[in-house]
Length: 347
Image 1 (cartoon, rainbow, N blue to C red):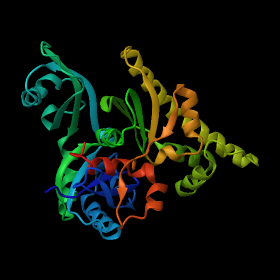
Image 2 (image 1 turned 90 degrees about the vertical axis):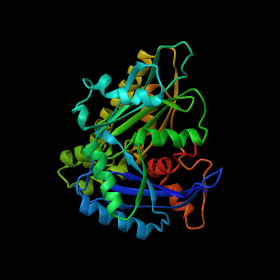
Image 3 (image 1 turned 180 degrees about the horizontal axis):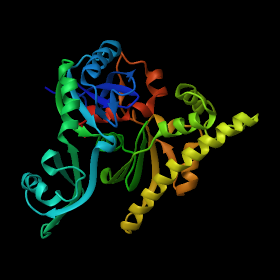
Image 4 (image 1 turned 45 degrees about the vertical axis):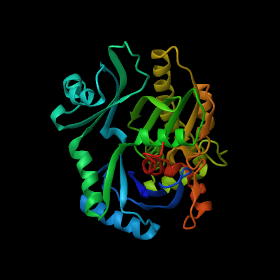
């Protein structure tokens, strides 16, 4: 009998989890929740203070009414390298075993300190001699830190997955359509872009900037603390019509910082399309708390000439009796990673 699983998303500013009933053809969200992360506990998706994160996990489980101790852990942000790779055709196991020889000169850290995996991304022809896929590499010490925090909190780690694959799984599960689709997940300190072709990840890039960079720019321009800048950013966004000179300064600051992020997305997608002339990216789906900035969706559409809309992480998922559906839907973009992790094996 299948068990229920919870996905854990280690965000820089919030720790999130979602529990899914794995026994159903149409999975049910049983519970979800989040707790704020004090500065310095989690950096770029990696636990840096294990003791404090253990306490946060225990708090999250007690306050969100999550019933399972079986969890799937996310690794993401800039601590994970995902790149195109072509390897000689062989069995999946042999391809994985040979990865250290193929990628030793491609990693920003020693290969003997890395955990490696390989995801084939296209149908392999019978007479083909090579396989195209995505290399996934993470520093072992980062993975072990996240796993240790979870284990010491009394939870059982079922698997470790990378964040872009988790969000891709969720979108594919909810049948967002065929063809080329770009997922843009804007977190606090990183933005992850994943191109899906027929629901399969074909290209992933992670850039080290997110919603927090906009907040920091606004705080610096106005000479206010980060908390006040965040509240102001949420209120004015990119579309606010300023009624005074101070407000105009604030709006201009948000727009300038947001356009730097938008340009990173535009240039990355352009790079993919230039390198893959036979593939068309038809639309963009936005995820992550940073995507909620007022006016960003419209500005991204204008910059890329691609229709950008918010992804629907809940899609065809149903809600259990312990879930406040209104609250969940109001925070829909924030739980995509946790839900995608929990759904591993339900594709």
